[in-house]
Length: 367
Image 1: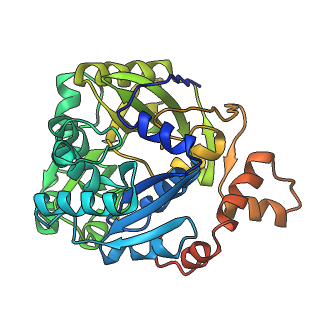
Image 2: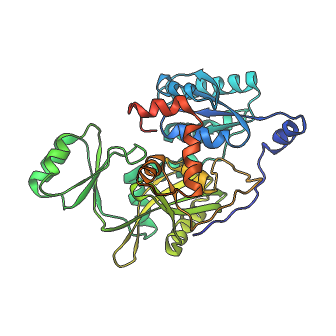
């Protein structure tokens, strides 16, 4: 397990210090396009003894149910509205509510902040430069980037739509097993493994375009999340989560690879890489998400909060202790297995926000 942490000077420090001296809680504005991964960011930000306001379109409105959402501010679609008007709206809300920091909740809002942060009067959580973000965030461009760095990455091809993929399957141009993926969805949504016998049925059911098809790498999944300032890694955690159980790993080669990328691209902010370790022990990078990540609340329970860019106080982190999602803990209890301390903390984390727990139980959103 690799975990590196340090203090970094940021332009919001004096504002936070003055707020703390006055006995005030920090105030954060979370930009949210929807309500799934964004809920994880909300919880991690709120844990920093902060009041978290949320700004977003109607798709993000369920976040208002959370008792950790101080106030919800309606906004236009971040992907479609003019950037100048969005910048003005953000600063207007920030001034009205004494916001100390703006943070992005997803790919769309991280992309937005890479473009408008220079125009904002309100301090912004570190994000990559716009060009670096685009090179990492789009799966086909990330595949090209791995080629430039000579980093192992599954071969792939991009198809404009289902018809193009179906034609390629019929022509024998797709090697199996293969992975079918959207270019810009989070949390594994839309990703399926296809074999020769089910490929046409899976392709016909795809509801997104374009479609990235990659060779399947047989091995074990790994994720590595880092927080960078100017290309220097300040926090890092390597983990896997088979069947809802988060386990932590020491993967020196994976750590070396992401350090090379971070330094060469002078990355800022939170970057998450998905990887596979094959049967021979070779590390393959699969994709990159240069934003807060879907599993960050579980990682916070383990002891590393990626919403905290200063890490003024460390939480105890023990890489030998797994963290189980609540559904796994409940099953353990039904089998009369006694959960460990982190499992109870994860369960309490969800029980502490009952309206959002009820919303998640409906199955409408994968919270």
